[in-house]
Every structure is written in C-alpha cells, then in structure tokens.
Length: 92
Image 1 (cartoon, rainbow, N blue to C red):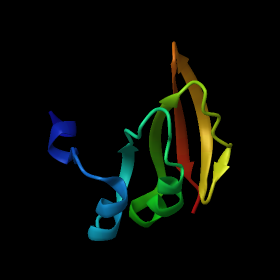
Image 2 (cartoon, rainbow, N blue to C red):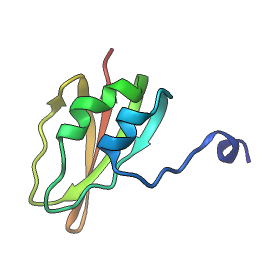
Image 3 (cartoon, rainbow, N blue to C red):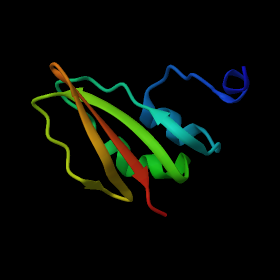
Image 4 (cartoon, rainbow, N blue to C red):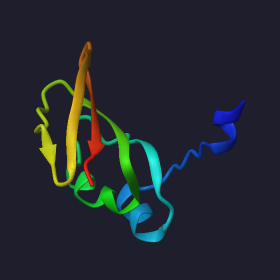
C-alpha cells in the first residue's frame, strides 16, 4: 500500500522526459528497444537520479553493456533467456 503512494509510472521518451522534469528518483526502470539499447540515456539520466539511485536496464542478450557508464556503475547482471537485465547505481 505504501509503495503505490510513492511510485509513479511514466510512459514517455526518456530523453524528452529528462529534459522536462525537475524531480529526482531513487528507482528507475527503462524499457529501450532490445536490439539497440540506448546507453546514451544513462549519460543524461544522472540529472533526475538521486544519490544511490538504481536503474533497471533490460536489453537483448547480444548487447554487452560496460561496467561503467558516465556516473553509473553496474551492480549486477541477470540473464533470462534472450533478455539481460543490468542494474546500475549512481555514484555521486
């Protein structure tokens, strides 16, 4: 019950959303195209991420994302068939 009051689901292009909000978040789920994960989003996502924010970044198994992107560091990676879910945290 408490989570629902503090959660917010946003269906939007991430780059446009980042440029149009001044809120800060502690947990962010991304849903990029699996064949072309847009890692450039992580390069600007720090603008709306609170310290120690966790970003959940699913992508296709053929994509290999680096352990560090801008100010984000990969916490772990989980494989689910043809999908990989990477978890990044903000180190600021």
